[in-house]
Length: 141
Image (cartoon, rainbow, N blue to C red; front, side):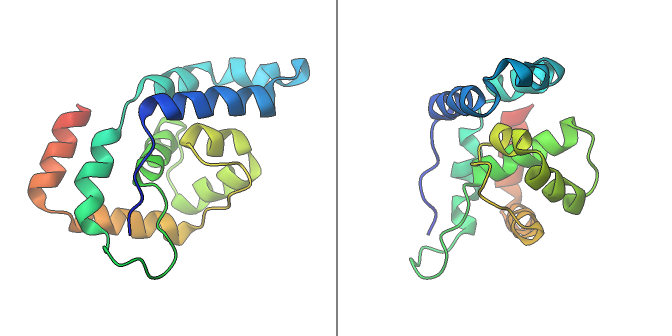
């Protein structure tokens, strides 16, 4: 069963709080300066349409492990492209090794993501109705 995604304002609050908590020490400011461009892009990218468009691709049954937030998964894939990663496996390794990317994606840094989670999400996007993919493409561009 797909849980409701958080709003963009809630994501921004999470991002701000997490950056202060994990990178608020003066010795860690360089990370924020180096990746200021990515932070700005993620801060401004509002993605609630993703949740609405992929919701029909998830089971309504409450059995099993609850799925990850599709907005965060989509945001993470977008960030992967912006950070010039071309492999899901390499991206998952980067998320685990460098918690900054996990936070920017909207995940808690200690919340390990696996390669299969991303492939499952991409399969759901691919299997979504063609009309939903067109709406998503139109909404993002």
